[in-house]
Image (cartoon, rainbow, N blue to C red; front, side):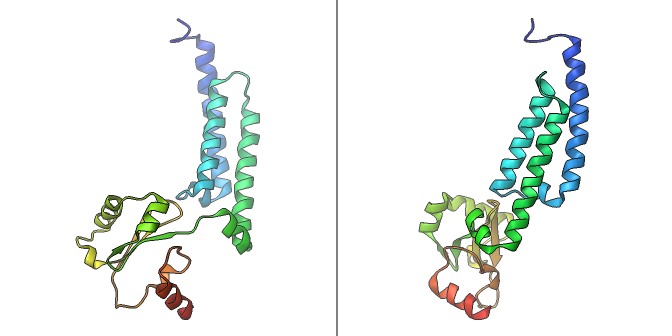
Length: 183
């Protein structure tokens, strides 16, 4: 019967701990800024999973106190802040830590090597085009796999190379040259 109910003391402890931890997480996330709740790259995801694990441990394990979890949360958010600050200052760190967006479709062509490398299916690109409200691939200039795994769709414009492709990997040479001339 311990599996279903192990006493009111544990129930009250879990409820009280969950309340304290909830307040601590809300305060911590608010202090750490918008970045901690933005669309996630892989490092944001790691911090989120680790925070969830700590919060769960504090709520269900007797040996994990609220102060210990709060200290762990604070350290994780401080490390995340330090990493994001470093990425804004040093381009070398940015190249080392962050993935770059990848071009998957450009001017009527699915870029098969890029699709394979990123493990993206044509159907996923078609879904992203539909979600962008576009009915014909002829109306699409480019589809990019972003660093947060979203697919961005750029509609055809006036025939010039979109300058928003700057920093995107997997560009055809002619596109990369046109962008470098523009910047």
